[in-house]
Length: 401
Image (tube, rainbow, N blue to C red; front, side):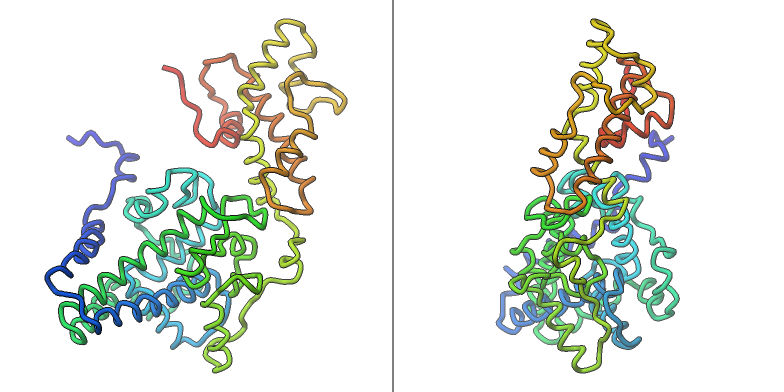
């Protein structure tokens, strides 16, 4: 009898899907046997940039965000080329990416380095059983096309066809260097946007997550490295918002628009470019939660509890209600000025900083009150109270042994 629980099984690595991924990496070493010919190197370079464009312009900007319009024929070409990179079907990719934007860098994000670590966000999440299925409701606008559903069903077919063509053009070296090398390079360049672009770089916009602009990644991914820009205005076909932010994918899309192959390219409005766009309630809440976590609500609660026991400075029942009078001074509770000073260090410039501070003050007080509501080391059974704790601590409450 298996000792795995249902939850354990949901997080098991799907070994049959890991095997092809590992074999492609191992196949790169076969170059010592096949040799490295110039035609194969040319194939590697061409396939890397051609398929990178299909990933950035197809998987991402078109299928995930509908940042422009195109014909049904070119839509299929983009999907086929993108899937030749062996990054699963276009419907799976776009559905997971839409989910990522809904829950970016929260517990529900499928690949957040701040939640499950760098390696998991970079590659391991793809092989996690819980992410294997495709939520077609998230991609219903494209799931209605029979040819895309056919590609979804035979997701490896484009990669197999491409590998076969490489072999026919340049023999074994064409397969190893042309296909395997370029595919592995595509893997990790693409995966770096999920991992590195949420760890290293600069933030121009408040987005409620850890997305960052990284110029080096932008060069290798044809513009995808301007990730903070993208999270600030997701539906834009243009991700390099400044003239010096190189975005080759957008340049090619513009050229294709001159030929009538694509059209209706969306670009960020002036309000976004000036960093004056209105922040949604979800972004304000998540940003406020990030700020609150800097102030250790549990430690504040312990200090307040000690003060109350010693001096009875204020009625505990008022604190537990979570709505103290404005003029009530709570010992050890950070002032609004302290919250503001920390926010200015943490976040990019925004005209909605006051809204973030107000929300952070509410969340901080609610979290401190939740810690005061129960004695130390007592398990929390109230689901509302547990939710408040998770907001600030970023992890479930651990019951004492």
